[in-house]
Length: 112
Length: 115
Image 1 (cartoon, rainbow over the protein chains, first blue to last red):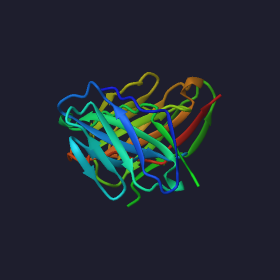
Image 2: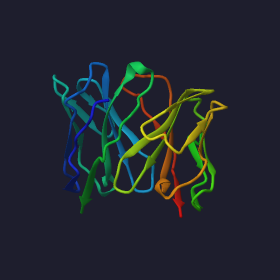
Image 3: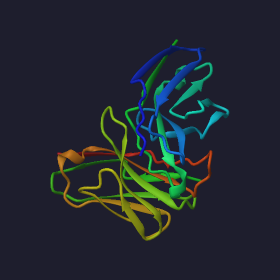
Image 4: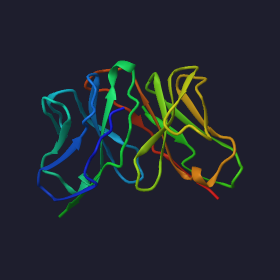
């Protein structure tokens, strides 16, 4: 399983764009990159998933360079409610499921 | 749909006692998982199941047993609880692989304290 490395914490202000970068140097050909969000006392919640290039949904964008050794989660115009822990994971789709390995994540604090 | 539910929400045990945590999902998902999360740490996979009647070990399976007798339920058992098993336990479920949207749905968690 590919190991991921993320910053331990980040600070931002309301209305700013936040970019969280994750390093996964040992990513395998069949691995997808997935990001989850976790609020205190809640289970993680899926944000976005991608394989290469750029993926965008209603809450975030995911940028993946050609070598796929890193990825960047972009949160546009964050609000106080985006304060949470963000996890970057890689997983092999071809096993039929993802045996996800959650690291310690990035703790994002959004201030007024 | 209720999604993924967990019973109980809180529990305090004494060392050596046993208990079972129940996870139920109403989304007809094939795959189910049990994780534990310790303070300041990410989630670690205990056991998982790829279908009714099947289970497999995850990253930290020692001291736990699981059963998947029904597709919608996944039980986590502690036969002889130890203080090291004090943690928050999360159950999750997912369906067959859907590239680009292969997500796990998590329950609200069970906070277990072993004295």
